[in-house]
Length: 595
Image 1 (cartoon, rainbow, N blue to C red):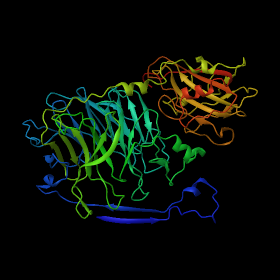
Image 2: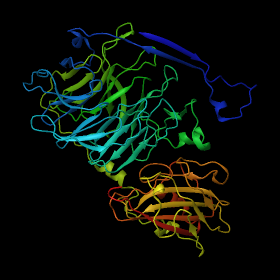
Image 3: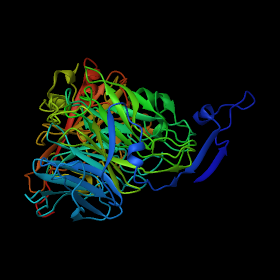
Image 4: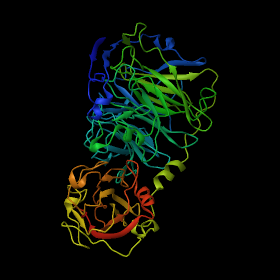
């Protein structure tokens, strides 16, 4: 066991003698944080029988000597696939004789450096490293066929390289991309998010952001709503930041890195562009539940009911690996998240514990994976000692019900903003007068091709724009859309509160909520169809005929009061009845098939 106390007056309490001259002066606090690493211990032959579980439940060893066993996936035939990070592979185990233990040694299925997340869907094994997603068909013998690379350009992982994936009820692939750091302003907007991609990997978007490291997530078997467990920020003390249970919905922010829990501000960082902590908190969604800080939640599994405890249906089970950043240590157990009849999370409670020594200085395992077997029993992995444990219920009978969450909630969220008219074809943008704005760009002429540097295949920088001034204007707004894209239209840029005195924007604007600097100061940028902020350049499928891109400008008689990350539809609703004039500039872009 290693222990180190960082008693740091990182942020001294402010006093009346010190003038508060910046936002940082208002959130100074002392921090007492620990590096407290438990000593690894080997479980004895009777260890499983001594683990604590609720009455009626029994824990036994299902397989052992497996090495760094991490994430779990159960195939329709009952075989279990396990990712092993240190061994850089996926193994397969089978209990063919149904005696409650795996039969013999595992079979290695595939090798890839950095391999971690895996899932099985419609006869295909999907698996991933920090930057790549692969799939391969499962053969009748449990092996796999040819491996296909679906994605090879996920952002760098940094601190949180153990990424996970699952296929949702909407037949889309969801990928957890943790933050690169403890708390920082990320260089890629895809970090600290949950991504949604097509099964072939050809398209993807940010589903939700502000998620520091949501390794474990899943869909409630009755409601079809998406839930996840997010790991908290380190170095804020023993009891901060608590772990979060979130209902994860499209377009929502979940606080990281500037606020956490119920809107508390992280004193280590301030939002960029002059955004205040209060504004960031107001735009963020609070967790539904919180759990002991530094427990380090890992894989998450909903139980569909059947073959287990009588009230297990609809509850979730999460493996808590434990962390080095708390004294006394927390985690090192399986917890159960209780859900009510409406499918809403109500409480987190211990389910299987006893992996810490009595004096709290050592551990007998660090838990990582959790899955429901076909017979309804629960399987979980210890990646320190290479053991898979099985939890059964004394009077259970039958087998697990099919896990088939309804697709409606995910499909409804994904459909918002799609198959609607372009901004200037909607009644919200009807202008009060007859004046038209002349919109130009030094990068391309009206109707001409947009240079590649402005596309996502190139540098992905916004083009310079200019327009004629409008008398009496209080602000301008921009919506850039592709009517030929899959979303019909695809939104590539949303900006508002452009100052009345500003009639030109330079190329290469920052991709963040609020811009700063002279003529740019106070300009706000919202969400694109891809879920990013700011400019998202043309990216039609390679080989498509040229797509059209319409830069639509609104002159308004007021500034707009919109939340951070507002969508095009929110902008247009707020602009309705306040439009003085409009104008547009159209360009086109195509990427050659071999480009």
